[in-house]
Length: 150
Length: 174
Image 1 (cartoon, rainbow over the protein chains, first blue to last red):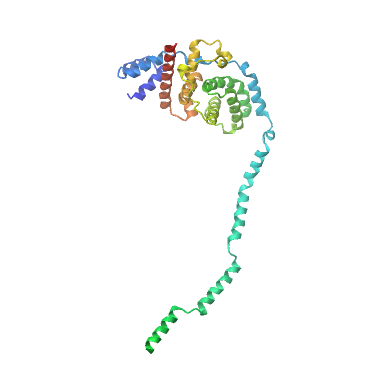
Image 2: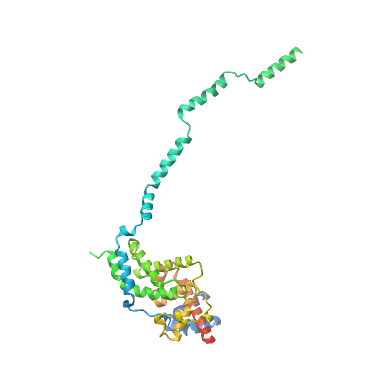
């Protein structure tokens, strides 16, 4: 038997939940656990714990019970404060509002289709039509020419 | 056709309240939290959430679980350790203002037992109250606490051992 199992059996014994043969077995086992044996004796000697607090008559609580009944019968509308109603409506439309805000933000930052072709044209021109800037290829050709002349 | 659940619940309030009041008085002893305040809130919450009651546990254990959770929330709000009385057992002296009407005629033994229960940590106090005062089975306590039966029995052992040692110490100091 493990220590935990013996403790569980002591708890059951203290509740009167063991048969007489189970109780005898426990007492025999406790000889192997001297400290638990001492705990067992102490626990079995406890006064009735249930008598520490008595169950009061219902008449002692007539005010509290009538308060509870009054509170649960109060109409639902009276319980809702302005803040609760506001929160209720906010939750309902928060998702729709979020989507609208996101869509609106997206249109501000996304480039328009008509502008795209405008921005592309100058780049194409630069590829097809030579600019005034001298390219390295031009310089290289001039250098070779100079060498040949020399 | 049976009565609606809310109507049945309302009819049960006079039966449930005294029993829960005893449990919460023991559970909240020494914490400064009033059992009547906790129970008022517990019954209202239970009524509002009646559609969530699964009927697999009794109405009493369901209410007890709600009241216990409210109490724990109150303890957190207070930001102090409510699970043990702040006064060590040997210095626990009941002042005249602390004595409630029903305690005036209590025997010394019962008073000592109340002090010892109040000084238990919350986990051990819960099991003592639910099993011994309320007479709940370990299976029912499992549903309230979510803790398995074997662990509950080990806690019961520890709770009773601590109670016994507290009472022994109080007797020695007399």
